[in-house]
Length: 521
Image (cartoon, rainbow, N blue to C red; front, side):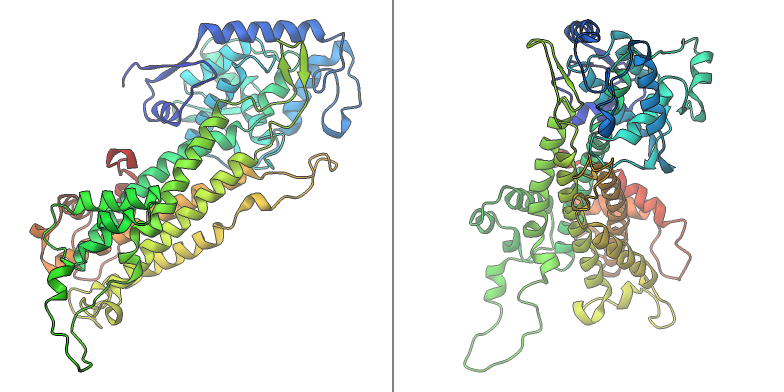
């Protein structure tokens, strides 16, 4: 991947492209020549229209103040005032990778030739991306309609040398970074402040990152589920091709197939036909010593993860459409000689999509937590020691403390799963009277995903502990054995009670290193 260049045209940016840039500092972006031609035509049209037409945000005020016409000598000052007045975010800075992803999306939008910016502005944003000059962007402040005004304003503020940025691991004033690199000051031209901050690029950029993380979670959830099924000597018919073809939802069918592929090398699954002939059926009622069916968290994994699989596929499509869309206002339509005033900056497509993904990940977390509970609760599993305690139950506590972490983290995800896009509050003098809350929804989804990795990591620990109790390492499916070995590399078997505070984060990092879903499809 070293030295790879991704060419932006405004039409074909993918989630994979963004994550390639985030994963490797040597991957760079360039702008296609045809895109520069579109930019220049758009800019020329704006310049020729400044003293001929009343154009929102170019020679008028903003929002409810749009009826104020701005004098010709104050058009550039207007753009600076817009950026400065909206760079008022509060809270912790969002992750650098979210900001970089947002900058790539914003650049891809601007070079489509409908935003009226100059070539110089596109080149300045391109330079910041390729040199990894990452503006400091506070997490909170935007309502996601007129797009990500507050967060994008902080990116714009750094671009003009008035904000702060991370560069080579250090936070400093962007003006100092530019000076050290011999880069001159950038001066905003008419429309450019508005073009920089008016759109959905932050929520879309964050969502692009989250889609990859959700793929990793899905892959790990499928592997953990298959691992759990074999540890309880589950029946193979629960994941049989015939069963799932009779209810042919794409996600359900795929999850079942992936589980079959994983478990093909397992020596632990049971055949239903052999079990059915194992016991005598007579005229008396009697209880057999084995379970005829597993609990739902083990038996219904394809039926629970399938809808989440399908949701993720839909979300990825919606996010990639947004990444390649024109989302600012007004839109410069050179072909028709017009300025289109509308609402493409409204973030509901991303907000609704990411809320759906967030709810799905919360359900995935609940599924993993319930399986963990199954293995740790001897009253339910009737096989394993309480809390997978491998020494003296009562004197030692095994994984009891870790279960509290899984339970509390899952509970938080259940609360965060409520769709944030329905929390619309009118603002901006009631001009923005219905809003998306898309960026906050994406940041909440990020927290849900972080939590899910914690819960799945605890499940991995529980499954590994179960293997050590059963002593069946050599009977595991290849994938399950690899998971077991990876956990044990980072965390020795728990026999004596010990403080796990330093060890749990290592397993969380291991969980986060999971290859994405497509590698097992």
